[in-house]
Length: 88
Image 1: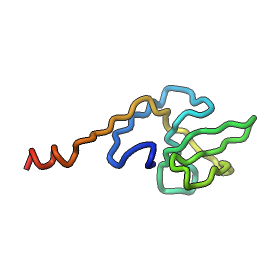
Image 2 (image 1 turned 90 degrees about the horizontal axis):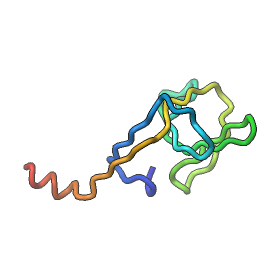
Image 3 (image 1 turned 180 degrees about the horizontal axis):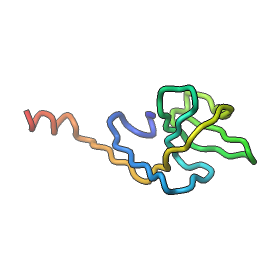
Image 4 (image 1 turned 120 degrees about the vertical axis):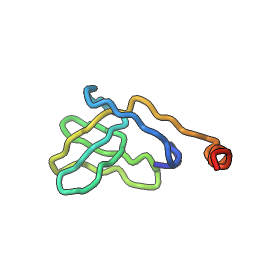
């Protein structure tokens, strides 16, 4: 998800929010054994997923899927290395 979200960023998703165009969502696509975090792009009845990393392509969702939640908060620790040394 870099560069938009650094490694180890804590992401909070709210399952009760109805997703809108351009929301960041957690989604499960039938037949895959992973949950994806992508930007939702809607065009009429078509659903597209835009990766957060611009090096990857936008893909249309053609399989049954379930949107698990909308991103409502993210938290990034910028001084992780320093904090780890202090704990040790």
